[in-house]
Length: 461
Image (cartoon, rainbow, N blue to C red; front, side, top):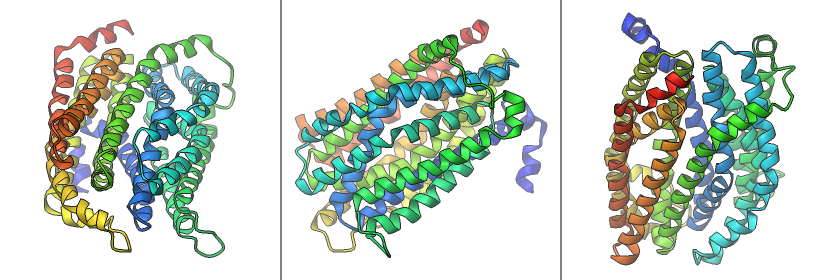
């Protein structure tokens, strides 16, 4: 009641104010949190089988994301395209944008399947122990074959985030999480009539949860309200101009997503290449980093949606205001995460302790504690990154975001290589170089926004 009264103040009710951002961002932040928890539980359950199973899920799952990120990145621009058309009063074109993204996903599936040998080749470069290599290949292959479900879910989610109705995305993500957790419990450990599938069970559970979320989003999309408002029940035709726009403006996003995720995966591979102890320490750290970072992507989507809407309406002041509102919300969230990392690192690390005593985990534990505490420095700075990257993308400044994000991530990955493989620093000290890089680069995005160059896109609309 107090919060609601607070948000009803005129300064928060303005277009782009905190109230405006929260309406879009809170469901997205929660939906991202549910997605994070779904993946987190996969790895938590697998950690009870042993460090190698947990590491396999992190390595295999991350590689599958790399392989589809070019395509999911293109589809992510649906948010901005839909928001811009809605802001311009062209509701009938919103469903056209969505259906082109589905066609795009279908066209890309043969390319996705062709990446399986590439993934295996990447795993071979790591010189993994057999206990990790085989389950990592299996986890990766199962997820690759289910990639269309993930791309379709992204398309639906970006349509709804573009029109600013993100509650259904949150509900679908919650349902996916519940289904995944329950399925994993039975499929990983083999309870009742289900055999113990281990890592394969975690992959099947993920796809089952994703399928449920796609069904929920599709049912909402074809409801009467949306059929009347956006013609979702009658818009299925191929639209070449919209497809061209999606590719022209979305491909920079896709390349950005691909290069960024590939850089992160190389970062992970470099840690895994330092041995099982470093791999385990990094896996624990990145599992919690995912918990801290992925929900902030909900704010990034909200920033893209709102800025895109106000750019479409030629309201630069509201676009700018929504960005600053997103910063305030993001910092409040990050403060909570930073406190947990500083005060409760032992609890966070020990959650991943295997059921049976493991010498690898025992030696990795001090490294993980150190890495969690150091991560606090960039947790606050990354708010700048997600908010301004989302805002610039929503304004149509996608090429600059693509180039700068790629440079940032590969710079950080290169820094880790220099620290760990040239200067021969232990993994947890090399992590300091990574954190330093991710702390400095977000200020480049801030400078771009402050320069006002994104405003030219307001004039172009």
